Length: 161
Image (cartoon, rainbow, N blue to C red; front, side):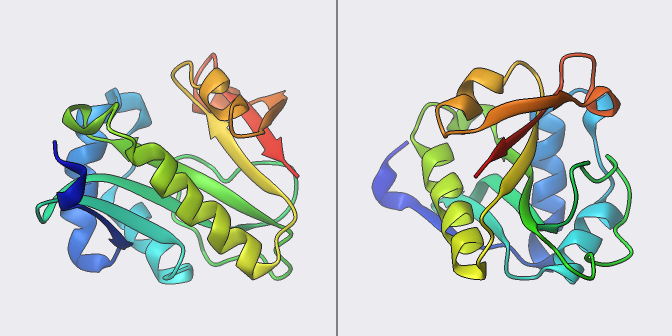
């Protein structure tokens, strides 16, 4: 996969079928969220999601949004809206199609998200690490703060900032 043909761009509603297909390739069924959940995240925070493409074909995505408090949003739950006083940037779902892994895409998507959160003035960023990804997120400065059993038996709520 040639990096010259990889682009990172804002995700929009036309990309939701591709997002669902990438999700299916990346996660077991218990982690799948509905298209409606993704659409709602996009509706409440339209500028905080990214799509990675190779030669115009979607190969990865990163969904994020403002959040508040110390508990993550429920998995596969449509957000009614954003919190009235968001105090952090929640990194909801980073997924790379298996053919795109190991190509340096994750750092590009993470940098885009972290830059967006900093531009919004969020001093704190949270995420839930699943499928053994705690060491990956620790390399980005995240620290485990609690278990997140609703996201799976080994899931960990992590925070940076």
